[in-house]
Image (cartoon, one colour):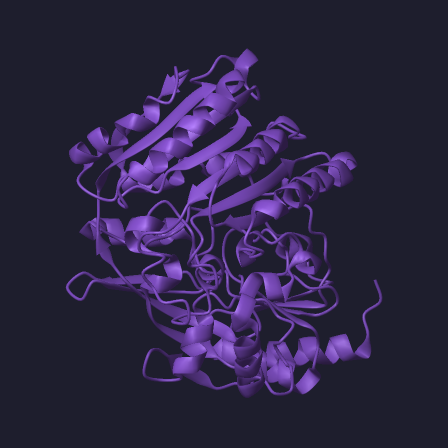
Length: 461
């Protein structure tokens, strides 16, 4: 690939300004450095600025302002859409900035932009504290939080963005700002669910909540032929479960776990799951009905430690596999919506692909609609259609299945889309993602980036 004079000048200025690594196309580390978790994404940036400090971020933004390349921002962990890496531009890579500092007395944690939830969980659980994070511990803190942040604790403790107390961010003018409820309050509003184009976050401060180290969790597998009956029973049960549980229903394949006979690996199965946000022994009793929705193949309801609970699904989403996720929010989950979910599950293109229904409400809904940029607080359910595969030859079939299933569910949905599960970049319609908040977000972006230096960048790290 041709290296232009502009690219050479951009690289030279970055190397002069940064303490961290600057990786261009001639660097032997380039091929590895440009890869992201989603193997479907194959982009070749001109240069990757791997920042080591906040000062490096300030310097990288200054260079971007001078040279005006396309810019993407990369944090740590998963990034389904792939927009953490741009074609022929500058990647501001924060993946080395992984520090987590916990103040147990104040119940706060300061988290670097490259940290994964595994890093946060390990640090906070030493004190029996948690941040409401995601469901796979290899997920990046920054991307999940800036897009809202759904997870196992959401009905009890809210979204990840609801636990934010303050954010440090380098805006397009190269200024490091603190955004919270009293300083740059509009920017803080936008960062809680507004996703992209607002600047480069260099630190998050989260409120912590007491939970763990022991927790009760439920993972129950039912025969696939019982899917309709189990889903009907699950729908009846969900309204009766306390907010300390965020029950989930999924149509998936049996994982390649040594606990299952090899001949069962990949076989279709119904998965019902939940994590109790309270005392572990008490949680076993509360979770027990999840194993009474039919005759289970496996009832793995148990007491475990929180770190183990949050990392249990990590092997099911390996780096380098190919992924495409789409989602809908639903205000209700009637028989027709259930039928569409079952039809989508029956058509899954690979054992790794799944359809998952997550329950919302509770603490999510108690935050006012206009208190943050997250625009879907009234929804009671989220349905995500997650294609996962490894063979590039079936790219079109796998993506086509997800889009087709999403289309089939559209009549039952609110019209809203979760920014973190919105497909690839060209799938994310701003009106669907941000609803009535889109105009306010655009105005805030113009205030802090009037020249569009970072507008095309992603804050879904």
